[in-house]
Amino acid sequence: MKRICVIILLSALLARSAGAENLASQNAAILRDSLHRPQYQKTLELAKKIGIKTRLSDLTPVNPANLSNAAGIYIKMYSYASLEAGPDEESAYTLVDEPEPVEADWTAAKSFVDGHKDLIELAHDAAACPVSIIVHTANPLTNHPLLELGACRRAARFLAMESLLMAKEGKMDEAIHNIDQCFRIGDHAESDIALIGWLVGEAIDSTALRSLQHILEISNGNPDVARAVTESIAKHWKKRSLASALRKDAALDIDKIQQWRAGGPESVDITGDPNDRLHIKMPTPLWHAFMDANGTYLLRIYLRTIPIADSPYKSAYQPLSIIMAGVNNRKTSADATLAQIMSPDASKLLMTSTRTQAKAAVTAAAAAVFVYSAAHGAEPDSLSQIGAPLPLDPFNDRPLQYRRIPHGFVVYSVGETRKYRGGSFDSKAHKEQVFYWQKKVVKT
Image 1 (cartoon, rainbow, N blue to C red):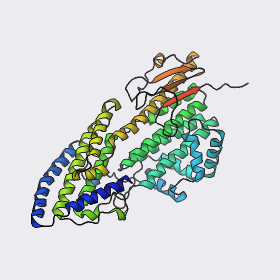
Image 2 (image 1 turned 180 degrees about the vertical axis):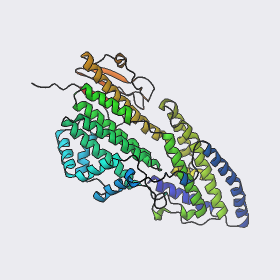
Image 3 (image 1 turned 135 degrees about the vertical axis):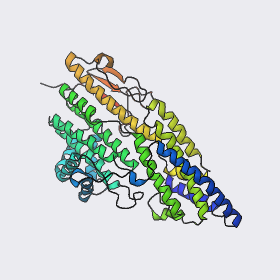
Image 4 (image 1 turned 90 degrees about the vertical axis):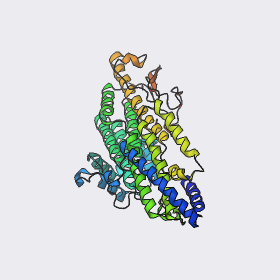
């Protein structure tokens, strides 16, 4: 809806500008074009200096042999299942998504896994491939690989679901190996040229890390399982580069600007719906000036956000928020109209990345507590008592928060507000990163 509203605004701005029909107006448009073009070209050169590709062909990797490329397997997954998950599948996902699944969730997941062996096998086949390179057979600007990336997300959830069922059966090594494969699928998604691939990779990492927390809980604090979880995170999880994702997104936007500039107003396709195209007429020089001005402004946003996108949350979030607020506040400026539609909110993306980092840190710290507890007969009084180096809280670059509770412990991140204290949390939004554990008493 937001994009449709901005398209209406854009149409109004262009229609007003298109009133320049007399010779004097057209001459002014030509002069304006001559001023904006050099600015755009100069900004394009600056973009190259921070690693932004200005040709889409430079962004597309070489397609490997089919046996090495998982993309075909992800496509095949959708020949077996519809795009939308059915109620049985959604019910089965509850096992992975909920912090405290009940018996009905386990039953739903087992029923789904047992009834979809073909999909589970395809997920394993895809995870075994070193890469996934989706070939954009049509215009990559309107042919985003949503089906393939959706299959990546789905495959990871299938494997996570299977992992938890394995863990409940005592097959801990197999369960953790499955989660390792989830991280590989996240790499597949991230490698796509579209920014949404990075987002899918982050979502998969979140699922995998949450599943590792479930496995720790199922093991009831088993130190061998905790060591295996620590190794899984150390070897297979990594912070995904937001700066790299933004560079790829900028390259796609440069290609869009160039195509739309050459194709005229009716070539602008933002939503993918032909009915949303700009059915207006305006002098070519004025259109070129409009596109050059928007391209310049859009690239300047990337020039400001990319250099700090991989910086710690504590130092980068506020500057990124200020940049994006400035973009959104330019409501009456024609040269910012396309940027408001096209530029991703780097501050929100940083928030997503930092939450994943916090989840990884909390999971690793919880595993370390279990190892310490097994060796010393009790939980440590503080994380510093463990001795081994632990990851910091990415939201404030300080040690994670920790406290003992009766028969257990809580370890958590202070979160985006830096005020979270490890209490109640929103299990649906997954904003708070917390591991809460109390030892289960085994009845004899």
